[in-house]
Length: 445
Image (cartoon, rainbow, N blue to C red; front, side):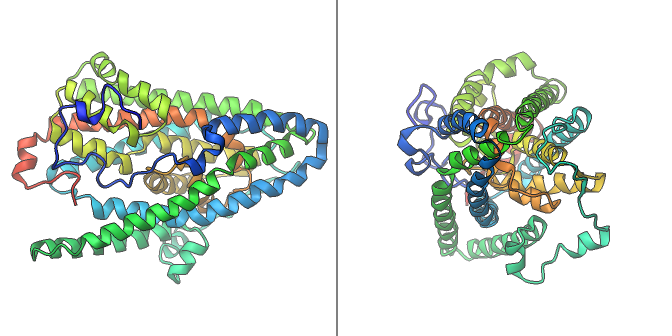
């Protein structure tokens, strides 16, 4: 990241004992995902500009291009499960979240993320942005296969570890990941008590495995504009293919409205619980919002976030803990977008999602949003897992990329404002002296 006026070296948080990105593997926009040196969203826009006239000229024959997004989606689907598992495992093992500060922080993260998803689902059910998109087969009245509560609970335990990965069953993956994560944390704590340092090898191996999967992912992400070209041309080539773009405008409106409500929720917490003026909070976060809109990266914004929290009077301990761990665990804007996108696609395809199905969307999105932290276009990469949970086909997901580049910046801004909100509240509810007295070591393994 290029140096800025708010680089970590110029903030009051520079401390050789604290690494503001510890616990979140560094994920940069590497050359593999920037063909020709241009940002991915530029290539997506170029693909759309080429696909629309191509589809109009070729007509129904453009359906043959559907094979391109199908192949790329298969590759992303294959990578999504191991990426999410490695991201969550590393987040659990590399971070030491203990004491009242850690407990209050995680509770606030959970509440804010649930509020975000409820906002997204309520707006999607009321406005129904996907109606009229004509993405499904004409005349098809598709219904998602319903399952009883007993069947859903039974399916939480896979028949084998391979089954969870083969079927992209995110509920089973969560059970396996949590079991492994808790077990590794117990081993880590036992090693610490004995004065051993060998456990760091496990953390390093998890980081290397994550980086390896990320390297492969970046190669696939570089091909995403081709998927956009194929899906848009194939859709436009149909008789009423342009309808999808009108629906995408509605999707943008619903997501932006939802993010607006989410930010209002943050400001309400500032006014009621933190006794801080919402205007003061927004002024303090101005540089942060400008940076997230330009970079679409939570991790790249951490130094600026820490500086902004310092100017708001938040202690270094609370700032480090919430801003850095929030990169993994707090993705409110991402969760809101993924829940909204799932309902949008169900409506566009003519699928009927019951209340139970939408609860499943909430639960799977909650986990997928955590796993999406630090992954380029993370909400897009983990979307197949959410779709698989309610048996929605994933082949039309690339159509979302035509607007995702813009919404990514908006939801990243909401994510970071959520991190700042939690940092202010944690500092208010649990003074740093209490956390220190309990022997907390925020963000360190």
